Length: 288
Length: 321
Image 1 (cartoon, rainbow over the protein chains, first blue to last red):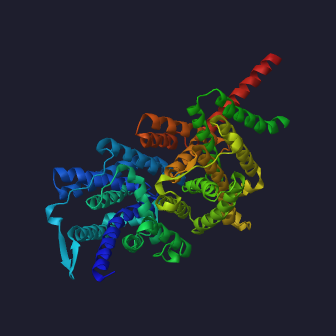
Image 2: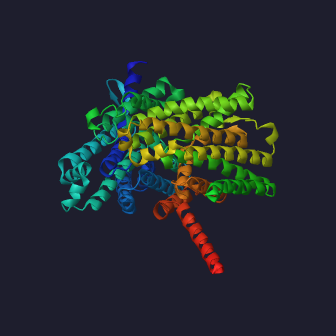
Image 3: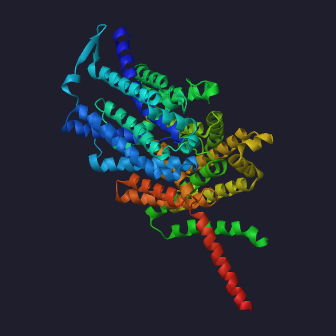
């Protein structure tokens, strides 16, 4: 493998990792705040991709991204309301709830867009390639890294610097205390859901120009996200970023070196990590 | 007292009769559906050993189902073993696999860790089987033999019902054993049992292995029914369906998953004949169950029977007076 292939694979791996990080950050946020694993995140990912496709064809790519974020965020806001009744019940019910939602959303998408694979047309400005260090790199991959990084930074600023983020962190560390202080926790939960699911939606929208997605993939996509969650450590919002990059790189290099078993590598990595460090690679043991 | 000990036997005979007798009068396609339901009943009841008694939502239970199907087909078709030896070989192999998988999954110590890893390993095996050309990749492996005396649809149905009945009897014995009370203890108060010197992780591991063994049997039967093993057996949707079956029937009752599996399998099979929006229907069913029947159907049935019984007693009293 020469330098040019290596560099290109590296960039592809990083861009995939960044996009998947957004979706995983969404899962980790709800996981910490509400104690719910959103098994249906993949459905919102695909929903984001489809909305981006439709809106891009009507208004352009920028509006497509924005529309995907806003619509999935709204869906997330609404989805939390029926969930309130299940809060604090056994994990099986919450699991079933998220899965049922994913099933329903996937089939509604089939009804609207059909089974065909769609991929968002790229705007002219993002076609073509830049040369960096003499290696031609597709512009869109670089744009994807940049956009995902910007969103991730915005998310971090929101989480660590604003008042909303402070409420979220307070809910994660002690929920009942926040309730006692007279803060509207259910509303904040809805907002948390909206942000988390919008992150999933924008990840799907960002990825949609690269590969076509079919509505039935909604649940399979969670399979791509799960290794990241496990490698980074559940409940660990910070660990998700390095984990996403590691899994993205493993995926990208696996596709070149071991094309036959390419899809297996993230799972293999996950099982390996769980055997060595059950709490996740990027979590210290005392944080559990 | 005597009456009470007879009751399980009576219901077992009744269930076997309900499962077997209509097969002789029904059309072939109906009998095949009945066989599928029977096999799924075993899947659900064995899954419930983990879900209901040990509180382990094993979302990746399909891996054992697929393991049984593929193991049996490989041993009989590729290696040329007889049906009976391969049956036991697969059981043995699956025990080793379940010990390994269960050990890894339970190691993280948290419920989420268990669910994720279990699901992840199932996905790993699914994508592995889907890609590996030697075992047919996504085309599957064809030609699982049936026992020589169960070649026709009806004969195979009777065979399946008898095997499933025997397995459920064994599971009933497990349920009645002191082991289950330990399991219930783990479910209710893990820490207390740890104080008492019980290694709760091992108890859960044993539950996982026992549950896996019976799921493997279900998988083998399903491969025989379809005369082949296909990667679709390993799709997570199936274990989700079975978990819904357990909850719909009532996961805290032994016969709950049986009832649930009958309902869920008939609905999902029936619905997919009419519409492509089969997941939508499934989703709505899950919603209805989670919101309106979190305890399942079984408590309702039991209270109904009690009411009927008390009504019967009343009429007897009235007659007596």
